[in-house]
Length: 372
Length: 256
Image (cartoon, rainbow over all chains, first blue to last red; front, side):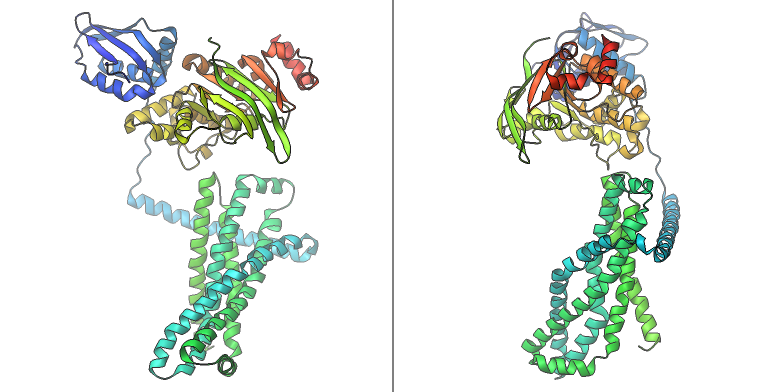
């Protein structure tokens, strides 16, 4: 870049001489040059563009903007010797600049307003969710009377994706949970010489709580998010609209198979997690507390009631409905663009895990009241 | 108009999924002209555009833009070229999480060291130049109609005052009135900003009204590059088939 100033004022003849490349690349330099100029207070200023080699719209804007700022009743400006293209650009920019060059400012909301709007929005979402579940229940009921409308292949695909494909990760995770729990508890039990009670503690905690909970949380992260992202993208792509116009409701083809598939898969996964959790416990009990696998299993059979397993498995369908309905609902709420898919997917996972834990707490209260 | 090519595509070949989309294709674009690329479906128009934009690398051949060889260009060279061109995608590709103004200001923020106010002013200027009102600046792309999104896309494409503008089917999906207005916008920008424009289009009205030259793609090559009036007289069967349909003839009558 040349060091010569791109714009200077010749006070004698009252000419503003512009030269060189008036483009975006030089914009900062031109701006600095303009700042250094001491403008005359009055008279007629002639702006000479003869030596301008190149001008783009950014340069034209800057010239127009600067001249407008200095011109007043006493000081008028006149453009001279500009090339045809530059003159056209200047005219174009000047025509637009007469409009307000300011974007309208968005009104700032105060805290009270934000809280209020937030509350109304949440209530609206709750109503939407109720409407959504109601509609699904209606579709489900209709499906009972029209068995042909069931989409068995979609259902199988959902079970395959959410169930079968999740087996390795769930197995690994619950095995590790089993190891961790028996390690922590084993440390305490060993102090009292009550090694053998590891079987009761581990069996009950895995079967009643950790198995269902860990599986559900894992599935919420793995499957609930996938539901939201899939449905959201389909909605953006107008696939959902296309289905509607073909007389196939999205509920039939997209939502119910997902919900039912998860309803079937999650209890099975929970059973799978129970097995591996206990297996992890057995390994740890063997190596740390000296309880052989056969001792462990024998005592397990005696000490752990069937009830514990059933209570654990009984929670799974409820969790499945929570994950599935929240995942699908958030997916169907996607609108606008890619941004919304991300936002709703996050919401889907957070809400699903939140409600899983809330539901688990409610179950705990109910079961303790029932003395189960 | 000087006849120095701004884009020079030489002997490029590309094989996609087992089929040769381009086989020794040659094309050059002169500074200051509006060149359209046409051809039947699957003739490789979009692929050619993607190759020129370096979104897809050809298997062989050379692409020179602004006298830089792009196929072997370093990241820095490519960036220099990228700052000098603007692209309007078919689906506009506006960033959905940003407002129109933020979208438009994005290249300025990335590639210049201007202060925020200047950036915002320049962005608004480009938004106005593209024919949107200042009210649209604070809206998100999803809140705009298709035609307005197109204009916002143009505003973003021209914000760096590029020398070269690529348009991918700019008038598809617009109603005739908006499409006509869009043609005017293109002509206007080309004239005032001295742009060179490369556009892929199917719109016969645009082809007749806007372009200086039209390149017809077929059989993996550029079959003919010529002004529209001469192109339609080319005896090649593919070209004849393309323009001699009822629509082609009707449009030709209007502009003859």
